[in-house]
Amino acid sequence: MRDVIEIRSDIEFIKEIKERGGETLKKCYQCATCSVVCDLSPVENAFPRKEMIWASWGMKDELLSDPDIWLCHGCMECSEKCPRGARPADLLAAIRDYVYKSFAVPKFMGKALASPKYLPLLFLLPIVLISILILITQDWNLNNLFPIKQGPFRYKEFIAHGPIEALFISGNILIFAFTFWGYKKYWENLKCKLNKPRVLTFWQAVWQVLVDLILHRKFRSCSTNSARFWGHLFIFYGFIGAMISTGIVVINLLGIFGKILPEDMNIPIRMFAGFNINNPDELREFAGLLTKLFGIFSGLLIVIGSLMCLIRRYRTNKQHGKSSYSDMLFLWVVWGVAFTGLLCVVFRLSHAAILGYPTYFIHLILVYFLLWYMPYSKFAHMVYRFLGLIFLKMYGRENKTLGRFYSIN
Ligand code: SF4
Ligand code: SF4
Image 1 (spheres, helix red, strand yellow):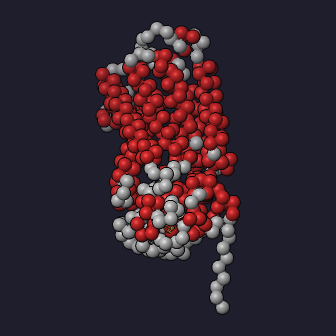
Image 2 (cartoon, rainbow, N blue to C red):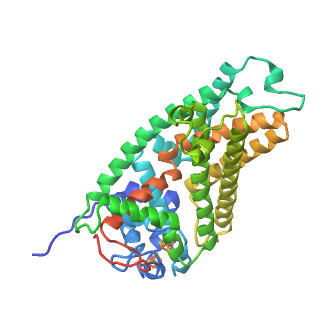
Image 3 (cartoon, helix red, strand yellow):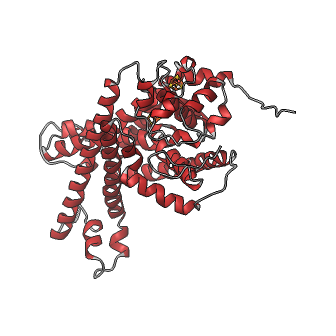
């Protein structure tokens, strides 16, 4: 007697995937050209052909537990070569979008970030919170708020740093808790289809994925689309640099390093972490300057990298790919955060408070938008992809150009 395979088809899922950019899905006639041309697809159970089949049959559960969607780095080669114009690269992007929504905690945030109709509301929240902080920390001197006279100024005269940091830190703790919960659900979901032996431990896989990420190996093994490689590389390192410089400033403002590091210990760390903008001496000013220059350099990397990615997306032939709403929103917010951050420095150095204060306000809103909505937006790909790639490493599934060929299906 032959085995009976039960296929659960989810019609709503097909509809949603089509709305998110996979509308050409039904054009696919399963020729497998896409899987052949993809440099990142493994030899066995290659993608994206199998995902095209699963999606057109509405096999939602298969796709939500498919780690292969994270091997794809969106070069669009498959869509360009597809003889039917079925755009498999867009389908994989739509499935990744669907993952952000499906594992969001709380659920309504996933829905809010997935649709442009909620965008005004999503911006309204940080606008209201930051406006309240400005109002309660100002001394109601309008000359302070909108100085007509040009001269040196500090952003903390516009909004006190203490409440902003308190809001930032408490918001981030909450978001990290939600994030952890969502990612744990996703990891459990990946494991549910497991039927092959492990070849690496979790931590061995973490280490290998980190090395791949640092060297951007997956992007490099994709032979097309160098603009995307450089754009992503710049954003990646720009973010790491911005996080390091912001971390140094925040830690210093909290006075942690000044208290825990003894005077005679580790001069370079004290130099970078021990400066205090309110209490300058030569060494501290120098360390502060270095940190700021490092932050500016990181910001420039993000601005250039996000612009490269945006230009590439706008120039992509519509027949070969359509960028999703979440892709474009993420790139514009990233670009906006870095660009307004650099403008704030320029306005402060040129003593133009009248331009600096509104720019700083916009900058804060964009920063909070990026960080608070991280687990529900395209920004979440950094963790979902990380988990997906760790899972694939643990079970020895690699792309053609990187080596071992095991199957997990
Ligand atoms: S998506 Fe295009 S290239 Fe891939 S199997 Fe379908 S028709 Fe062929
Ligand atoms: S977009 Fe590029 S990496 Fe992704 S499946 Fe297509 S060819 Fe492969």
